[in-house]
Amino acid sequence: MASLEDDRYYSALNAEAERFANVVRETDISRQVPTCPEWTIAQLTEHIGEAHRWVTAIVERRATSYLPPEEVDDIPLPSTAEECASWLRSGAARLSAVIREAGTDTPVWSWADDQRVGFWLRRMVHETAVHRADAQLAAGGTVAMDADLAADAVTEWLGFASSPALAARRPELAELRGDGQTLHFHATDDGLGDAGEWLVRRTPDGVVWEHGHVKADVGVRAAAVDLMLLIMRRIPADDPRVQVVGDHALLGHWREHT
Image (tube, rainbow, N blue to C red; front, side, top):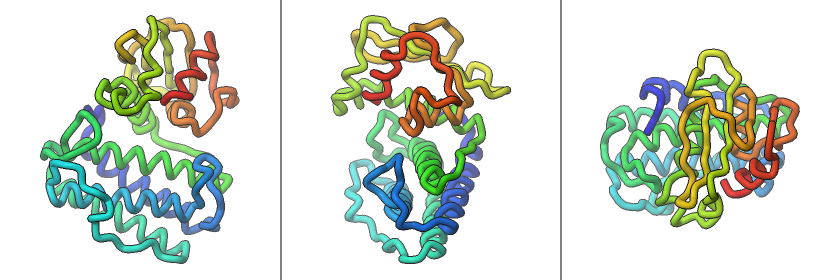
């Protein structure tokens, strides 16, 4: 379940789309994206814009079963950077408005355990933010993000990794079962408290996790945004912004299978 207030997610969705759009407007959209090597910035933009429009349709139709994306009426991605930026902004703005109208507790289909509109609001915030980071890295920029949002992205990701339903469908998640190995992630930003610390345990039944400060087999410290980028394999474990203490191989195995 979400750990931030709805209004925080609404503002973040539009802000992240705006940041993404600014990168698109100022960058050669034919440039390859190193962290998504099969895509250009134009294709990355198309992916996010189509995701926004697909989720908008799910919420508008109150879909309680899978809605094939090809059934969604869509406006094709424009050809110029300026038009692409506007297309991205408009899709995010409409998504935000449709979710507000529906309410976050309204039941709709999702591929996760949480079958509410609120799942999609949170998911689209973090999907947009991570791919905004991809675009910024491709453009040669640095990635900044509010600590509470980056920490929430980590929490959401761990929720996916620890979901039995997802593990049943994703063989790589099933590989995270273990016999008690532990990982501790610690965001060094001020003000996060327990929301910035995560203890992950690999059990025979799967991954479990909780917030808290506990010594683990491997400990990872970084700013929340850098923890997010590390966990989502946007930066390597030996990045100078990241401090790893303990079993590096355990961290490597975790990243390979999430």
